[in-house]
Amino acid sequence: MWAILGIIAIAAFMIWFEVPQLAKKKLKKEMVVFFTLLSIGVGLSIAQSLHVHIPNPLDLITFIFKPVSDAVFGLLE
Image 1 (cartoon, one colour):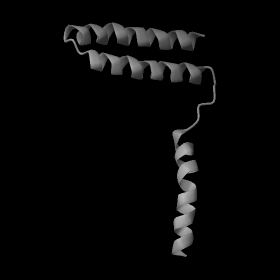
Image 2: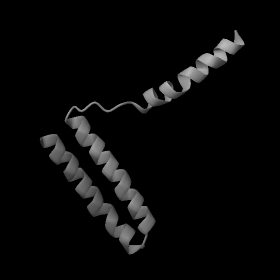
Image 3: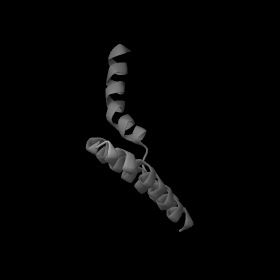
């Protein structure tokens, strides 16, 4: 519970610190990217603090390219 509150507090501080500068310069696209990445980061951090299994992206890459690798090595033998 305290970890989640800490994550939200840090995210709120980051918003409080960054958004006024972005709004003053009228950087709307950068603000959208900032909120998107911050939301993903906060969501993953909260999930990790709740001990939810988060899959490793490398597992997907291995699943996709392992048959290709096996086929290439089979041709080279």
